[in-house]
Length: 160
Ligand code: SF4
Ligand code: SF4
Image (cartoon, rainbow, N blue to C red; front, side, top):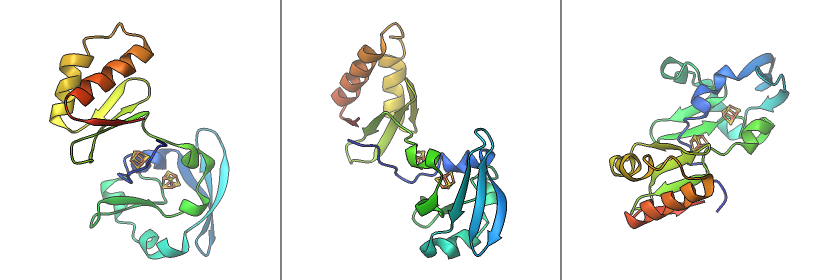
């Protein structure tokens, strides 16, 4: 299954350290520069997100947020206000290799990079500390297979 973004906003909440506005052309058009790669991208606020973009309160709670990221607390979803013209690096980004869902289909955890588990689910976290973490000698394929076996046996489902 291809990567599906759940719009939790964790990634974009820190990408103000990377994407910075170099030129404000006015009329909701900007040139942004990637502080690490030097890549420049012309972006335009999506027409349906202009009101959302004008609300800058996000920076009081998430000071490192990308200048174009906004979070709607009512629906608990993050939005890229330049989604249609966002930089290439944002288009290519996927934050997990293996997605782990609980019995209700809700995200319970993500395997990020090679072996990092990101989870707020106590049951899943405990499974990792008790059954996965001790087996550090496995190669990467065997580790993936072990993770899938352990979590599915415990009632979770896995998407890759
Ligand atoms: S890419 Fe991942 S971290 Fe970023 S908003 Fe989507 S699910 Fe969240
Ligand atoms: S441009 Fe959009 S997708 Fe990229 S970091 Fe900013 S808010 Fe996130």
